[in-house]
Amino acid sequence: MCGGFTCSKNALIALNILYVVVASILISVAVYGQASSLTTLPIVGGIMACGILLILISLLGLAGAVKHHQVMLFFYMVILFLLFLVQFSIACACLGVNSDQQEMLAQQGWNTVDLDMKAQVQERFQCCSFKSRTIAPNTTVDYPTCDVVDKICCNGWPVTDDCRCQPCMEKLKETIDYAFKLCGGIGLFFSFTEFVGVWLTVRYRNQKDPRANPSAFL
Image 1 (cartoon, rainbow, N blue to C red):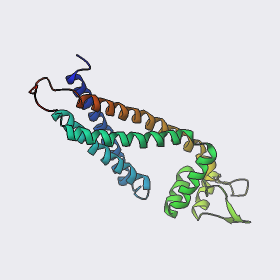
Image 2 (image 1 turned 90 degrees about the vertical axis):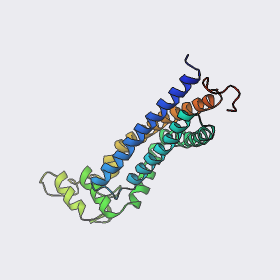
Image 3 (image 1 turned 60 degrees about the horizontal axis):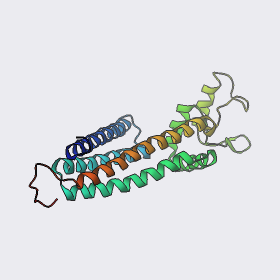
């Protein structure tokens, strides 16, 4: 019957298989990013680290569920609960960030990355600088790439003050907002699956295997 030992065991195994699939996708995305010469993106390393951590936790949970190993299940439960707290907090923060805070965080990220990465962003999104185009009259900030993208934005027309690319923040404002909302929503969804995993583990640990010796200590 559902809710019994076998049901709890199968549910926990299925949940951890789902985590393995998700972790494999994260690692694949990171590897693809490296293969696409995007190694300068700090987020690529972060994605790979998250994928590796998740797959290790999932394997621990799978081993504990299959063997009904109390110690493995205990450490799996504790780690998964801590991961739930962190991910839930980050997801709520992403969903609660307003436009001014998004701009501040984006500015910090822009100031952190190197010139090559800024050039890639400017070429891809056809924008120049982050927010302010000039630091002095007729002085373009942020490198020669601006001259290249300005010509693209003007479609062959002479580049003037009235005809040039917008700052990157103006072009990326909607994309940044969508990214925050998407990350927050996905993070919130997976944090609840982790809470379900903790609940399943607690219930499963406290159940006795009907095939085991009734007098055995579980």
